[in-house]
Image 1 (cartoon, rainbow, N blue to C red):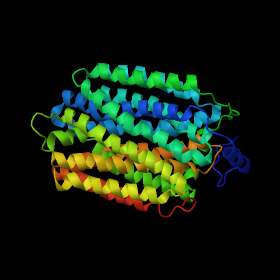
Image 2 (image 1 turned 180 degrees about the vertical axis):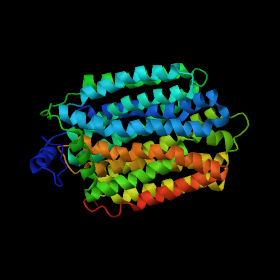
Image 3 (image 1 turned 90 degrees about the vertical axis):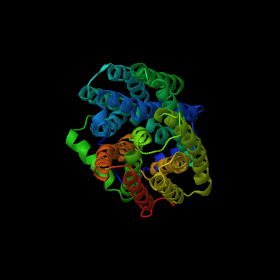
Image 4 (image 1 turned 120 degrees about the vertical axis):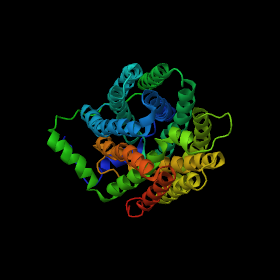
Length: 416
C-alpha cells in the first residue's frame, strides 16, 4: 500500500476500533515502557550528559551542551518518522521495540567510554537514533490496539511514564554523579529490560506488510500529513510548547548552578533530585485526572489550552524570583501543566490522524514536533543566555512560547 495521507479514516477501521477492547495488561506495560524511556532521556540528557560535558570543558559548557544536544536532536527528528514508517511497512511493532531497547545498551556503553566533546556528541546522536526507533514503535501501539473510547485512559497510562521516568532518571542520575559511565549503562539496561518485558507479555496481530516505497514518495507522504488542517495545528501547538520547555529544561542543572540561590548544603545535582520528584507527583496527578476527565467530558481542547497556560505561568516564577522556593513552585506548577498537556494532547492527536492506515508514520511526523524543537532549543537557549548574560530572559521566552502553544489548539475543528 502506498504511503499516502488520506483526509478521512476508513469506516470499517473505525467500527473495528469501537468494538474491540483494550488487550489485558497493555496499559500497565505501556506505562512501564514509557517510564524506562523517559528515565533515560531525563537521567542522561538532564543530569549525566551536562556533568560529562562540564568535566570535559567547564568554561564552555553552555555552548558545548547546546551543540551536542542540538546535533543529537537532529538524529531524533530524522529517525522517529523513518522508524515509524518502517514498522508500518513490516506490519509489526514489537520487533522494533525490542531491537531499539537492546541497542540502547550498546549506545549507552559507548557514551560512557568517550572522553572528548566531539565523541560525546557522536555517541549521544547514536543513542538518540536507537531510542527513537524504540519510541516510534511504542507510540504507535495506542492507535493500533486501543479503541477510540479508551484513548484518554491509554494516553494517561503513557503519560504516567513521564513523571515516573523523570523521577527515576533524576534520582539515578544524581546517584551516579561520580560514576557517569556506570550510570549510562544502568539507564541502557533499564530500557532493554522494559523492551523485553513488553514484547514478551503483549501479543500483536500482524498486519499485511507494506511494499518498499521510494524515499521521495515517503518524504512527500510525510509532508502530506501536515497539509491536514487539524493535524497541522496540533503539530504547531506541540512544537511551540516543547520548544519553550526544552529551552529551560536542557539547562536546568546549569540554572541551579549559576542562577538560583540554593540553600546551604544543597548541591545542584541534589536540587535536581528534589525538584524532579515534586514535579513528577504533580505531573502524575494531572496526567491521570486530565486523561480521565477529558474522556468523561468528551473535551480535549480546553484541557490542552489550560495546561499550556499553567506551564507559561510557572516559567515566569524563577524569572521574577531566582530563589529556591520559586524553583519549587515552578517545578510543581510546570509538572501539573505539562502532565495534563501531554496526556490529553496525545488523546487529541490520536483522534485527528490523517490516516489510520499510516498511524506510525503520522505519529512519527508529530513526534518531530517534540524532537524538532530540541534541535532549536539548545542553540536558542545558549544565545539567549549569552546575549542577556543570564537565565531570566530564558524563562520569559519559554513562557511566551507556552502561551503561543496554548492558543494553537483553538483552530482545531475535528475535536472539541
